[in-house]
Length: 527
Image (tube, rainbow, N blue to C red; front, side, top):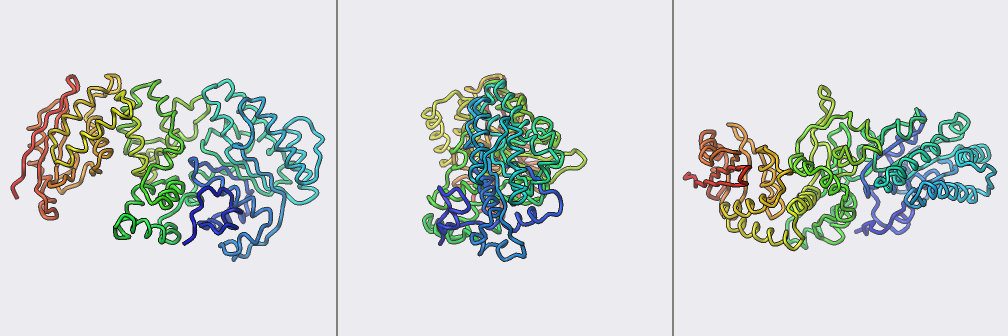
């Protein structure tokens, strides 16, 4: 069983150390072997494998064929050629201020020149970059330019928009170097990657031939792992995890999928796993929100502080519509305004549905249990104004009520919590209260399907208790009798009388916004 690549960041170190590498070289071959101008832009969330992709490309173009012997591309017909590689990793270039960014870029260019035995004569940044590419192209071979985390100098300064805008201007000037025909003629390959997909007008307007792979089906599985890859590469690790959990392999495999799969970045219906969380889960043999905890989105709380209604929107965001045009108009000055786009680009939301060509957009929602659980916990703790200790006390009450199948007590605790939610966050929609109920169930031990289908329509929620199954209908500003009557009339309970050995309990639950009151009426269904 190969060791998992935790703490090993470069392609060369993974291969030479014998760590597990999921072979993506067939996809890279298609990009490298293209007859079109090989100029690509690619955005994905943090810690998803973008830097490893850049490192792989760097090793490939440096002619390190021995590293690829056992990989797809090493068995292909590719004609290997060593060429100069200019890799710019903006996580390693000083960018604390716009001035230091320019100094850092000068230092990076000088370091690349030194590595190839060159001394650059030009003093201005853009001219120096052009000189380096031209000289390498003329004296060795056309150059591969790889730019990792292109957006970091702007995103890290987003709380100081004046600095961020100046950094954007410096970067636009730097990247503008690549537009010139005299430079392009000496550039074999260009790959630019980052987290944010800012509008081309704001940064890459000069690079008309830059092909965007972000939502391109060719790159759907370039980073992250598909189900097939998980089954091929990680079976032994999942089996070891299953042994620790005292479960059958299939059970643990399904749990891992629910927690870490679900990311869909293109119009293809292909979904991928978060590699960072999967590696850590299988290494530590424990389910945990590894990716979320490694970089909690502070911008989410900033959104809510600036506009509290955002909390209500995020709590009801599952399945909502997202227009494709939002992806094309995202700029640094709108960073804290278009929060849905930001959540989508940074990996906290994903596409749930196929692309709708009529509406030109998608349905969006949380990709998996890790993100659903983590965001739910963070938002509910924040909007309730609770310390972690106080939130933990609420959690204990909710858990005990769920374990005891005491839905009335559960709703009483929920009513106490909703009273803590500020009035400007509560919205006058049934879905808001429905989602609060659902989120608490998710956090504290139950994962109910919402709007479960029956022959007579959709019930609001099906909740599996310890000794019974609750068939739930919600109403706002109504009575629990009305909700209960709808369950009876539409016979939502009927499919479960056959497949369940538990008793069926019908639950009519109503919410009153003005009094933050919750009324519950329960009825055991005699079968």
